Length: 466
Image (cartoon, rainbow, N blue to C red; front, side, top):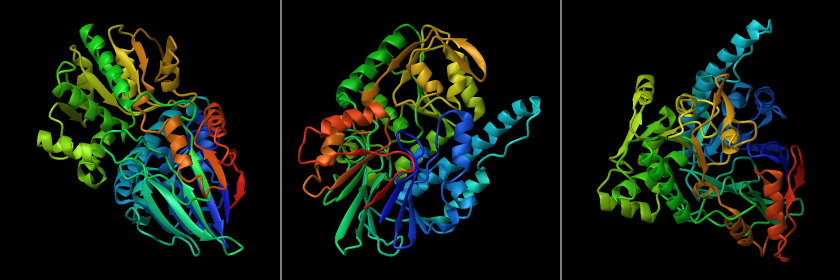
């Protein structure tokens, strides 16, 4: 069996990996690459293989860097099954439609500039209609349910604990010598102390572990410590009469934050200020979190029972859908907390909230997730004094705070625990989905365990014989 790494190689976007086994082809993930606009457009438009030759696909979870190019895959000729959990299919439906809408709007803006320069207009990589037309190819599977996506591979999914429906992909097969082998693809590995969702399932019996290393350089703060820091930021911002603006991924991070905030308000740790989720995608995703309660952990069920809630229907959280509701938030002069997409502040309503609040020193911009290079989120996290939003320059006076401990990815200690779980069977470890310094730090840490194989940090296009 041959594995080729085509995405999330020495970076944290665009997860996409091709498996070839006895003349058959299987794709794992089909994510959108994020980065410099021109480069991202080219990379996402062109596949390094013929989509018509892919006989099946498995999606680990619905985040756009893992799912976002599926409509383009279908548009270019893929016509087989896309295996995913029930919750992942539901999330992918709303996320891919949203992605198509963003691409249509973005290309209009780009083409306006291109016309002024006398350049030809570009087409969106895909549209909302393309996203809708991709959904019939999804095939729902449950955790632990065995299926055969291509001849010779027996696959089952296990809970990755990252976002709703997220999964690690376990592939059992026979090698050319007839020996039984197991490839364990981690997807994005969740936290063992995170709210709402169950803990990730640790690998067992894996010969090859393909593992993400997003936060391979250091252990996360304990969730409780990050929670305390989060509370302190809100208290001091409210005390000076400001707003807390949080760029947050619509799926996963937003739901965790509303859970934290609802608890803090109920416990009297922060003032009962409005908590606004201003993202149609995040609102829809939150509805799905309430639908898929089968993914909740015991602690969340206890919280729901104690507060006599329907799912995660927090009484103190305001969900906005319309543009008018969103614009009205700019007229609000009292302290409030606004959680809005996108998580890297590259598109969506968060740009309007940043534009309207970044030059007010009473406000705080709270960064709670990893920010890709060349994004507005990264420039904010780096505390740049001047940033461009919608092409206009703004002088930042708002405080910027970054809290890494709220990540829904495992930190270094969690990644080491994940790898060690299969130490008795492991023959090789392939690292992906991480920047070079993060990967090197994790490799150095794993080198402390002589029973472990030396990890390989995959390059884009690198092939592995499994």
